[in-house]
Length: 270
Image (tube, rainbow, N blue to C red; front, side, top):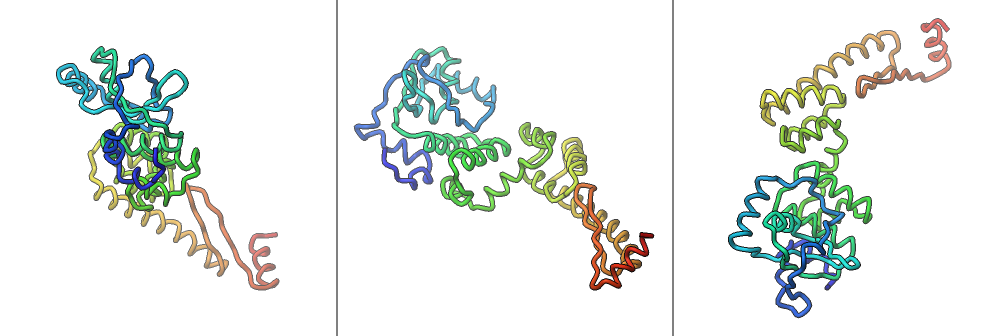
């Protein structure tokens, strides 16, 4: 298989477009010899969609072959797991497939691209796929962006979603809130506040725009509250700051000379 990375960036059509080549003939492979892709980014497939595809396969057959690679005596799916699962549901014995000679890295790339282009991964599955490429294959965010045809900021923002509390990432997986909601929640530093607002979004069907407004108001309220504490502190110690994150923080008091340091200790009764 040619190692031209740009082909993957153009999507699966660049791969399936080569089936007329001698090396890319379609073969019928027993379903019993096929195993799932360990780098498949999608955790779950919609059952209703699978049922519909299985019904279509029973009536019309499989119109597009899956993509596999040899793994010992078996064949691992590179792209087309949804068609494979539906074929099993339709009680087929064989499935048309193209056998490719590619490595783990290329297999992971194609599996991700297929899902992004055809089935719309949920935001957490997408983020985990990007993270997996970075951790397993040492990709940079810029390299991933080039592969999937997105800008680097999109990749970075997707991965940041993984820092949200588990309760919120589960809401994203289930479609209870959108990635737009989640990105707004990320700007809140307090995890409890993030979760509380996420529950409100889910229960009250709050829009992304309203969520962003609520976040701005809450941040302003928190900043105002701690700014009042800081002003009181500065009334005693001129060079003082309060830094807060996740309801925890530090008080910093600066001094310019030994006299100021002695004054600080004296005010603390030390």
